[in-house]
Structures are given as structure tokens and as C-alpha cells.
Amino acid sequence: MSDLMLDVDQASELKAAFRRAGWTNALIKKFCEGDNPGKTRQFLESNCRFVIKGPSALIVDRTTPFDPVKFIGAGWEIVEEDKNTLKLTTVDFSDVRFESGLKEGEQTIDGEEKLKRLKRLGIRLDAKCGQTLYEEKGQATLRWLYDTYRITWFELSGTVLRYSDGYRYFLYLRRGDDGSWGWAYLWLGDDRGRDNVSPLLASNT
Image (tube, rainbow, N blue to C red; front, side, top):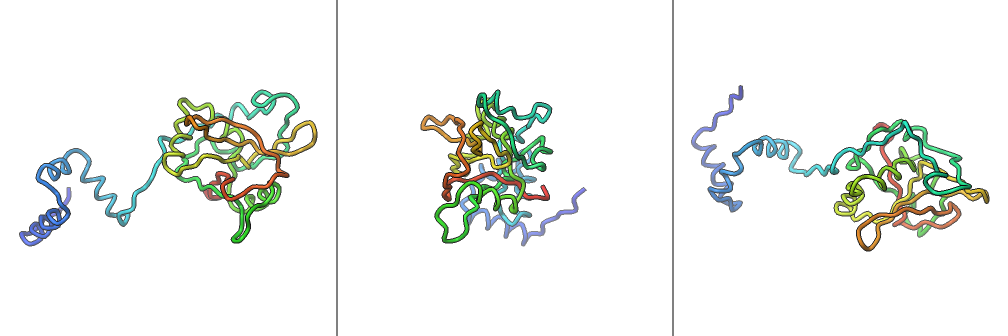
């Protein structure tokens, strides 16, 4: 049981603070309902920082590996994957950061150089995560990424694909003008700018 007690001076100070902030009696009454006081306490304890969460954790079915032939077409194979991302069965995109791999002053780098750099930065989400995002009902997580961070394009650097011509590629997802997301692939020999980001998780996640 809480031993919280307010003396007259503390109650008056709290009342004055509410008044300065423009609170009304109706708003104070609503604030006291349900679990609102608990949420406010958590907000104050976090130094008044909002914690942004995605719509839910994305569930990744690792019992069925990503099949590039089935997803893209004949002639495709996986030649390299981030072993750490293959262990992930859930991904909370509020914990994901999007990195281009570019250093200060650089305008572009090619995909192979980007791959080398991202390997040192964290766990690279793979093509299976991309497929799961694309096929998710209503593409809820992708829409949340756009609404929250204005993300419109990203490639899955945790999986390196190779076509029958020997060239290497990343699968990428992009947002269309109608708000829906589609997929394509980009040759690692092509240049990437700062908008050509990839999702990463911290290595200790």
C-alpha cells in the first residue's frame, strides 16, 4: 500500500501547477480515471520522454526459410546471410535503426562497400523479414514505419542474393504513391545514397 500523503502546501502547489498548465476540472477528472495516473508516473520517471512502440512485434516464421526462387523467380539463390538475424523470431521495429553506411562527407557508396560497413554496425535484417513485412496483413508495420519515421525505402542487407548471371543483389521494399509497399532487388554494384538505408538491430538485442 502506498504511504503517499500530501500536506496542505503540497496540494496547493499541485493545484497551482495544473492551473498554470491550463487544466480544467473536467480534464483533471479524466486524468484520475483508470490507469492514467500510472501512465503519467511512468512518463515522469522516464524524464518526460515518449517511448514510441510499433503496432506490435513482427512475428517471423523461421520454420519456413526465405525461398528466392519462390518469391522472386527462377535463377536466384542465397549466397550469404547474417546468422544472427536468422535467430530472430520477433522484431520490434521501435528498436530498429536505419543506416546508410555512409561516412560524413560521402555522397554515395556501392552495395558491396555498404555491406562491409553494416556488418560492423549491428544485426542486419534479412530477406525473410522483408517478405514477412510485405505479406503482413494490411502491411501494418510498414505503414507504421512511414507514419512514424517517414521511411519510404529500405533494403534487407542481412541476405545477399545472386542471380544466374553471377551478380549479387539485396532485396528491398519501397512505398508507392498509394501508400502500399512493393518489393524489388538492387545490384550491389550500384551506388547507394543517404536515403538508401537498411534496418539494423544492436548486436546485444
